Length: 112
Length: 114
Image (cartoon, rainbow over all chains, first blue to last red; front, side, top):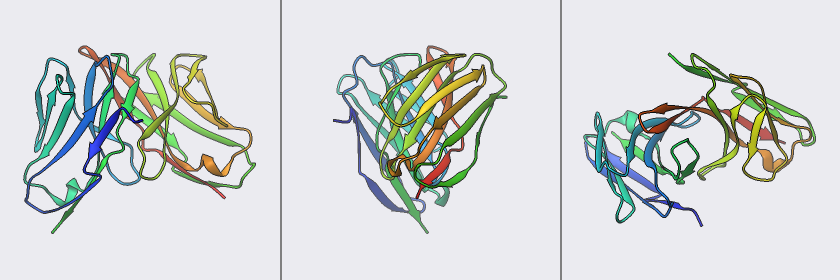
């Protein structure tokens, strides 16, 4: 069973609207949680990284939240743009040195 | 600044042929290096990681092998490809940022085994 579950699997939103992606994890112990953006056919690019002591972090129009007690995270995209169309991957690390557990991703499509 | 290179970008190989994918990192020394595979609609799967020259750890049993002949060079190989080896292969490196290792991915290689 995957230790990082993401929902929804895919999402279609209108340009300019907001959306929220969810991530639940069972990875333990917990070191940090990351959100990556992956354009089709490209490598993932880091958006945010949070340790257990952080409960929110922003990167431009992207805001990630973390509840380490319930083992849940969300990624909120504000005022979506066409360039936001991509797969968003939640990644959890049980150690600090870099071995990661990946979610399957949420495919976001922003339409005009 | 640091840069990670992978080549080739795409590759079509017949079953049973050998494979060699190369990854190099610029602008850093003694990085942790990783090879991942991503199947369509699936999350990334860690195949190998390396914490130094000649040090390779394998995460899953498979038809592939990895080598690190130089500090910033990581090679993924196979002697005989299988159809199931098709996928998107990503190389990554990590560096300590604060209390966590930030991981950076290369552009990837799309491998199709026919």
